[in-house]
Length: 159
Length: 116
Image (cartoon, rainbow over all chains, first blue to last red; front, side, top):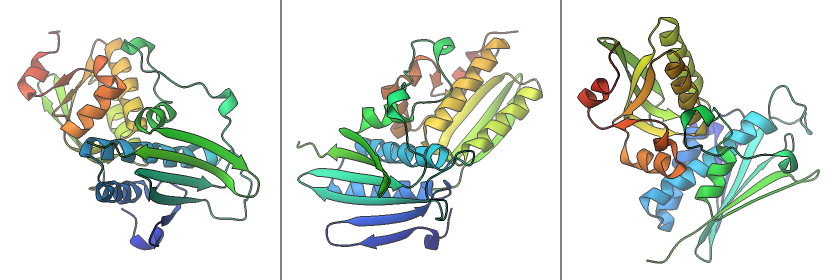
């Protein structure tokens, strides 16, 4: 597991900001932070796992696609980094995951579905369907100034 | 969370593969190389004991699908054993339990393979 210095965390009263290397080495630590936070907010155990998985898939996509070594990414003078802003507001958890890598082309993206039998199943491509299944809102935006931002929202359901 | 770890031991014609820790896009190459090595040695009947598995992401799930397909093409199979409840709930929600057999007892998992 990476040393704590590789993941920088800034905490204010209403927001948590995480800076992590964009190479995937800190995914386990990010999952642990997300689980702690979701637990504090009051999400039940099964939804904590869903939030962990959705955020993990989002970060994995940044590592695998946005910062893929075979692609040019826009701000090559910078170290590849994942920056996360997390806040709770109005009974919901909002996670924004930002990178400055290759833009994700949603227009050409075709989600992979889980098929009814093994022969028809693909060996990958389940990340975005997992995010959409496990979070209440998934929004992607990209521009040259702020980079790419994926916004994941999960509502805390009242018992 | 513990780092991903993998080991295997023979149960007659079947390999029991023990998985533990977090299986994500960073660690799944370890799973791939271990299972590839077993395939190259002619082991196509695999039971993956997930008792110590703490997390699995889509990269790991995709790898399991790929190896299960390869195993069945070679008249073998890949089955899961002792999947922790929090992981079972996720893979069930996603539909993976429709295509991968999941067992709760080692003896039943081993007995579920067709005889040669």
